Image (cartoon, rainbow, N blue to C red; front, side):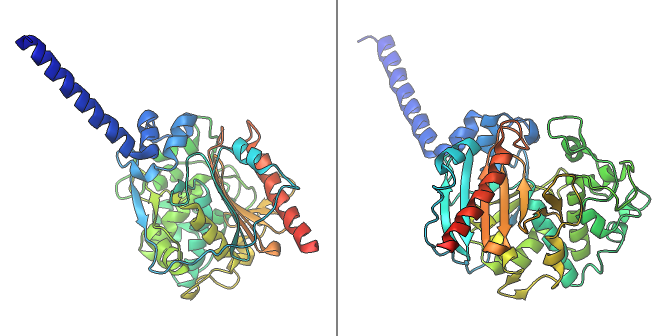
Length: 406
């Protein structure tokens, strides 16, 4: 064999070895990273990612510091167990497999009396995985306001917002109270159109903060007044982001630390969570907690239990009856809005996030349903995922009522 042939053969062997190493690495990184590498997110603007990008990234948002940074929400030393209850039979009400497939569901956990009645996973997701919450985080953020009132950091819901966020003085938020911020009845104009790249919800994270101010405060103080405070409900993620600033300003702590201190650690969540950060380094409080679905279910149980942890009650006694009651008319029969909770006229209430995230709580049946998904559109209206999920909640209620009647 000539020298050239030997050299080429050597190069071929080296190439095979390199290919094998790369192939082994591709296998070892695991399916989540492989999916993310195959469908990398196009910047921070999740509203305009493709379906494949969302499928890959929703479970990995806090693994992408070059795109978006996060802050940990540490769990405590003791995990609150979720014991197994009797399996819940939904066959008389719904084809569960077809429903989960149509939802593009990642996880479904149903608790009754604090026990797991049903738990299912899909879309390559598993119990140890963490999925982003989107606006489910709003209900956690508002609960921290209750904790801050109990701790004496916030004096009253009737206080003006600018008392805790002085940079809002002289803006349309001058006459807005903490309660009006919680119920999204500030009267300040805001566009929450998830499909419009020029909407406020698409633009707020791009705001350049004024010196010494938070980006979201800079953005919100530049908005116009549309109605007098307290008269008209208008859904605004920006206002929940202000609630997060309010809590961190009043307590002197990042909201991720305060959430860990008051709920995540003492209630016994099984995994650390994370909170994604805005461009200004503050938690995006209207969005973006990354957590295990079982821990979302535990948070629902915490609310159902009356806001009590191993440290005792963390909320004022009148907080949850007010927070989970219809405080604002949203113009849709059967539904309303409380303190960052969606309410149903049957007494149930919900935390709800775009693309299929949710915590449904029904005190009458001691029921919690936590679910994560990747819908084909943010609101789940294009292909009917949101109406189907609401119907699913009702189907679970009927199944439990049929059980109780036997």
